[in-house]
Length: 248
Image (tube, rainbow, N blue to C red):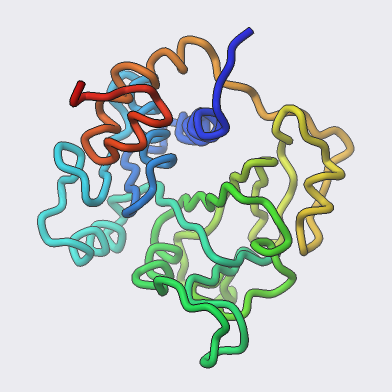
């Protein structure tokens, strides 16, 4: 029986969402080893596509002018997929990256929004990623909207949320209904567990399957050649999660 960690499960799950031919360029922000590893795995499986840009990487970072250059690329339509998360996420896919409590006197202050709203509006396929699945994260309404999940019909918005990936499930987002729809549940968990740990209503089809577990061949790639690439940007993650230590 194939054994794998939670992080390896999330990596392979996200990599499958990058398998379509319209995904040509995936950009991944700072401090995002799981989405970064997923993008590199997808590129290996697809034989060189998509192009992968890991911000703050070395061999994998094509940008030499920091945030301004990646924003230019997104605004020009040259990035197909980006990843966002949040301290809080609500049922309309609004993200809170600022803090919890009544703004501006928040109870806890976090890193801030930076370019999240711009990327949310311009990148066609934004994948929301938050490993922790709890009512602390998935709230009825975020305390502060760092980046809105939906916009009025007269707002030009080529980008927006497509999927939400957590430790419990994969959801798809319907921008017309302004709601998430449950796509699949992580093996060993249930639909009821997802609903109990989600603070907003979601659409649940009559038949919800399990998220596909990692294939042995993909785990082998992840723990070898892909892991070496991951180590270029996240050496500690590659060592501790993937068992790849390029310094050894």
